[in-house]
Image 1 (cartoon, rainbow, N blue to C red):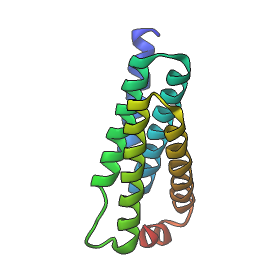
Image 2: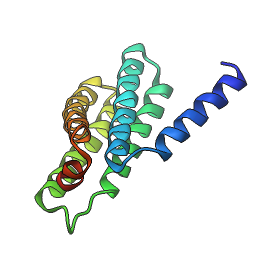
Image 3: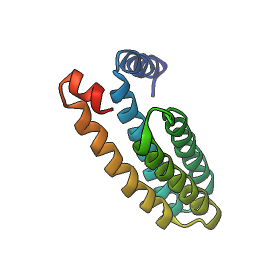
Image 4: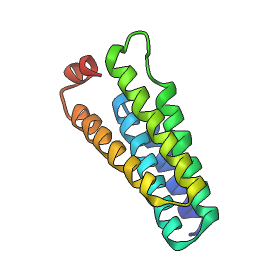
Length: 134
């Protein structure tokens, strides 16, 4: 990739993040976690331990970010449930990395895909309705 193209992609990503709504940012985080999980599973299947480790750590960092963004006081049962799901996925990713087993990663991908779909659907609602639901 040329340096010019890399800078263009970097700038595009920065602009996308800066102009995104909070719900869009959550969807972007899910997208990043899912990409990292898919890459980690592929690396496992290909025997690339370094890439496996890097991608699983990337997914774990994103899940930690999602967990940290939860409003545990005001979010009620939904925040508690999301926290539990993120903790489950984090545990699955650690297990996958230790055991070099893509099965826990695939379980995490299923959970994150469903959550991502729910947030993407929420993002399609009118702004006032989406803000209230989030």
